[in-house]
Amino acid sequence: MRVTRRKFGQSGLAAGVAAALPASLMSACSLASNAARGGHAVIPAESNGAYLQSTEVSFPKNFVWGAATAAYQIEGAPKEDGRGESIWDRFVHTAGKIKNGDTGDVACDSYRRWREDIALLRAMNLKSYRFSIAWPRIQPLGVGNANSKGIDYYSRLVDALLESRIRPFVTLYHWDLPQALEDAGGWPNRDTAFRFADYVEVVARALGDRVSDWMLFNEALAFTYNGYLDGTHAPGRTSIIDFLRASHSVNLAQAAGFHALKAISPSARVGTAFNMSACQPATDSEADHQAAERCHAITNLWFLEPALKGRYPEALAFLPETIMRIKSGDLDKMRAPLDFVGINLYYRTIASASSAMERMVHPTEWLLPVKMRAGIEGTKTDIGWEVWPNALYSIVTRITRDFNRPQIEITESGCAYNERPDGTGVIRDERRIAYHRQYLLALAKAIADGADVRGYHAWSLIDNFEWAEGFSQRFGLAYVDFKTQQRTIKDSGRWYAKVAAENRVPAVTSAA
Ligand code: FCB
Image 1 (tube, protein in one colour):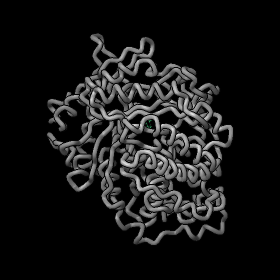
Image 2 (cartoon, rainbow, N blue to C red):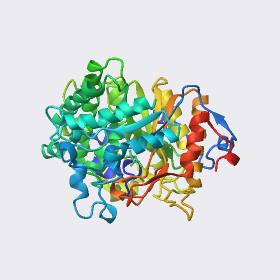
Image 3 (cartoon, rainbow, N blue to C red):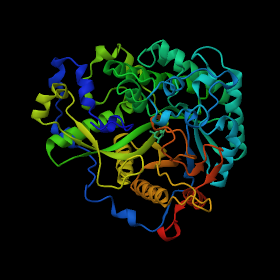
Image 4 (cartoon, helix red, strand yellow):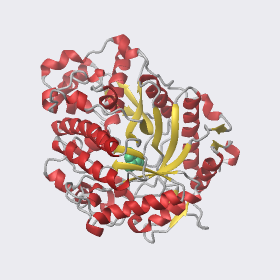
């Protein structure tokens, strides 16, 4: 098993899930072969798409160019203005959890320097800023009335963005649960779903007159899996049962939050940012195709199908309902007709079936026979993730096909490359330009093939605190000197500014 921050999509989920399941459910696990193959987007292993050679590609009129950040990764100021403790504050101060003992106590100091961040967005000609609201700034203990100083911070940010004609694109939950709610059971506690809906209501009342585009969650799979099953993220628990229960609470919360928001702002555009990956069978065997479908169900549908179809994915039909504490009527309660599907995509996943021998050696793999690993044919970014632009094409076209052509927002894509300023202070990050260029060409092809994609948000506007990796991985279009907090636009930021201004990806010769 590959144990990195890249979680679910590349680990032996099988072992954990199966451990929690009664053996009598085993037989329900086999999929009809036709169903497994139907609609499967096979990515040719040998090619990453000839279209990536295209010289220049334009995007649709009104396509929105943006960049993304998240509160805990940039704000710092954990105790300022009455902010409560979050699970990330607790986690980063637990020995051994974060590389080099880094914390987000200061991060990019954006709680004070948000005007500088807006100046960067303007300099890059961006028209959408995806940022998140820290729940413990709004409700320090996760319940009750709004902390007005917390609201004021986001209110000022929103107003300044609007003045700059930049869309505030707000994520309501990017992983920083108030610690008090974790102490009360955290996401595995069903009640947290309703606390979330209350919080959404408080925020909607405060900002709903000016914010019209929202995401309920960022990467529900990542924070439930890493937080409750593999323990590499806050709150650091390692329990399959907690993971399953957290999943169900989040699915309930997603719908409850959706309806709370719509009740206050009926015309708001409300979605969620899902972490997705293109699941590719390791070989053309029937068994590997089935494995790839299970990989797809776990990775991409676990929180999407409940919202859009009021059910858990069929490929995981053996779900342990009692262990997950699914109550009668819950499937309807999970429904939320999201206005758009937010896709965070960085890489693909290779899926294969576990062999009979492997299942004998690891009996827990009987129930979810799929092994998932990272692709290895593409180049790697500095964090070790494979560059595979065709994964974006593949997932965008598949979601388009399987969910009746929903509106899609690319809510994140990006790469960790750790170039630093050269002798003249310039950050020559050609590799980042090449990454975004190729992913954008893949996206343009998906749009040409019929996908309704409304915008692209590069992760990230600025280098920031990369969770368990601390400050060791730089994803920004702008460089941050973490000693002085000085921000400097990288070559990639200049290139992206041109893309945004011209609404097209230029020919490669003019890229760098
Ligand atoms: C995504 C997260 C985001 C950032 C990028 C690199 O999974 O949503 O906060 O860490 O990865």
